[in-house]
Structures are given as structure tokens and as C-alpha cells.
Image (tube, rainbow, N blue to C red; front, side):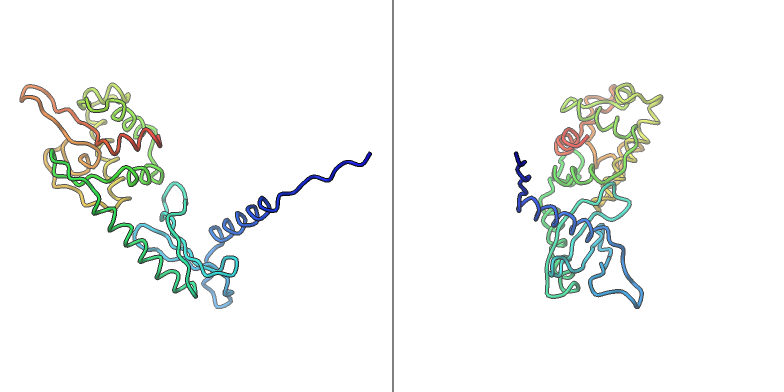
Amino acid sequence: MRKKAPQVSLQASKTSVRGMEERAFQDRSVRKSRNADVSGVIEEEFGKYLIKAGILSGNSVARAFPKPPAKTQGLIAESVGETPAIAIEALKETLEERDRKRSGQRRMEGNSGTFVPGEREYIEALQQVRFTPAQVAMLRAFSIAGKEGLTIGQLSQAAGYKSREASIKVFKKVGLMIAEYLELDLPETGSAQNDGAAQILAFSHIESDDEPATWIMHQELRGAVRLVL
């Protein structure tokens, strides 16, 4: 009895070929020599993005990815044009509009005067910035604390730091890393603890002069941490 030939899905085959083409387009190295062929990929840095352009399936396509040393090279946006150069210019306009829109949607935090990024911005930053285990522990501890927040002393215990100074150092470093990735302007510095980098993550609340400040993570960042970390 003859065995039936395995059925091959045409759609699956097309998807597979498309996926291989996209990987080849993304991973192909830049050709800058005189011998570069016309289908070679052009790379160009644009702000926090790395643009790659070339010919894909007969079309001139430009795509934007996070610029190294980002953790991953996930696709941010893409544009097409008559030539790779035209596609690049169209993509730059798309990226500028994307950043303008995000900037206009940021919330003003009344407690600190900080413009707080939206959850999607925080998600992108958490996905791309390379955090150490200690930094991840800090973000998780703050997220779990929710609206109640944590003092620096409580943070040290919850995240397993040996000293308050270590907690403050990690706290400020994480805020700075996120601010740099999202190209945020840091708020004006207050005290040694309540500086601009820290306010990217949270705002401080003081019940009385006799009690230490409680830090409350921005709700947008809390949501992002729970989804990503």
C-alpha cells in the first residue's frame, strides 16, 4: 500500500521564504567597498535607531532597529520607496513623527515636575537596555510595592542590597540608563537621593520630617516591569 505524500502548505512555504529573506536582510553586513553590489544593505545611525536599507523581494525597503548596544534587534518601523535612499528618508520622517507623538503623550508628574513616559516607551526600554541581576531585582521590588512604595531602607532589604548607598547607586543608574535609551531630559537635581535620574523611575513622598521619604514607582513603569521582567 503506497504511503500518501506529505502535504505541504503553500502559505507556510511562503512564510518560511519570507522569514529567511527578512533575516538575510537584517543580518547582511554593510558593503562599503567599490565592489558593493546594488542589493547590499546600507546602514545608517539615526538618533537611537540603526537604519538598514536594501532590496527585499524586489522592493526598496528601509527598516529601523534599536541601535547597539541594545539587547535585541527587534524591528521598530519600516518604510518603502523607489530607491533605498528614498526609503531611508521616508523612514526618518516616520521615526521623527513617532518620537514627537510619544513626547506629546507623556504625563506630567505633579509631585516632581517630571514628564513620565508612557507604558509602551518603558516596555521598549526594558526590552532593550541590558540590566544587571541587581538592577532587575530593584525594579521588581519597586513594582511589587505598588502604590505604597518603599523607603531606601526597605528597598535594600527587599532587593537584597547590603547598604542603602548601594541601593541609591543602583536606583540612579537604572533611571539614567532608561533616560539615555529614551533620550529623556533629566529633571533638575534635588537632593543626593532625589536626583533627576531617580525621578525617571519614581517620585518621593514624605509624610513628615521625622520619617524617611517613600519612593513610589510611576504607574506606567510598574505595568511595564510586570509585563517584561
